[in-house]
Amino acid sequence: MNDLEILKHAQEYVTKLSKGIDPLTDKSAAESDLIRNPKIQQCLEYVAGVLKRDIAAWEGSLSARSCGKGAFGITDEEKQALFSVEGTVYLKDIADLVNSVAAKKGCYKFQPKWINNYLLSIGMLKEQNGRKIPTEDGKALGIIPQEKYSERIGTYYVNTFSPSAQQFILDNIDAVIAFASSNSNDSSEQPKSQGKTRSFTNLAYPPGQSVEQFCADNSDKCIIMSAGSCIIESEAGAYSAALLFNGRAKFVSKEGIKTRSANYCILQGLLDAARMLKKPTEVVLLTSTPLGFNSKSSPNKALIDEVLSELAARECTVYIASCNGRGEELVNLINAYRING
Image 1 (cartoon, helix red, strand yellow):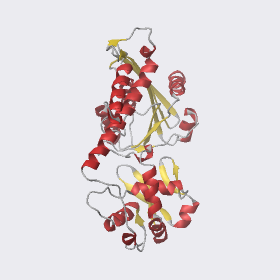
Image 2 (tube, rainbow, N blue to C red):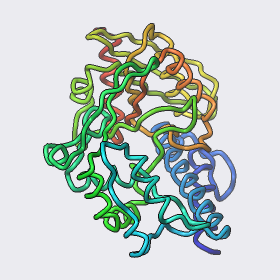
Image 3 (cartoon, one colour):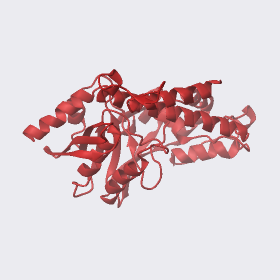
Image 4 (cartoon, rainbow, N blue to C red):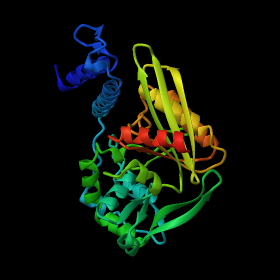
């Protein structure tokens, strides 16, 4: 049995455990068994999802290699053809230039996000409210935020790069590629959108920060929090959710949801809260566990698409945040808004 087969076997076992089934006998565990605890089952369901994602990524990598695809590479001779241009350009323009001189059949393309991640790592950019903005060093280098306007989301900013900033990136192209290679499995490499109805940005949750402080730091946005649970045997789920906007809070909850997935209940809470919005705004969807927004193979893909479609119909800019390990804190805050909101 190879490593991939072992991983699949483990995923099968954890999936059964998350459903309250003994994987050795395929029989339902006793009510007193630890794996029948809803919180334990929710954790096991999450682990099963992670294993499923890793298996898909592994199989995708094997498939790519079987088709002859290789890692991106650029020779010293090709680097000589890289040069900055007059005026400011976008990140994609720089990536397109690199790909134009290093085009190789069967290889992956150079990605604009590799540059962003590298500039973040060396302190030329920083994360602020879900955006990558230049630091003082970045501004001195020639990274210039440009104001743009869209009918759908209003005013927003895009970084542009002066000739000096372009040249800095081209001079450090090997470091950019090396950094991308060493962080290829990092969650920040996940796509920020998955198609027309799946447009969103991943918003990093600050380590060690309380849920209440996170909400305070993002009070300029609408925050939708949702928590859910289910009893697998009876296929009965429930959620509680809160919507915070302009200093006001709305609470919504539902019981008797027919499902065997706690994540499904959490998503249903996000959906019902999203439907309460009346006008375009920036929205943060906050949960205590990732729900599959970054996965094309999520078992709840249809419901995820519905949540994003509702927000897109209201012309909202969407951010996804997960306060991992702070589930109890999130639930307590949601319930506080039910009492005091």
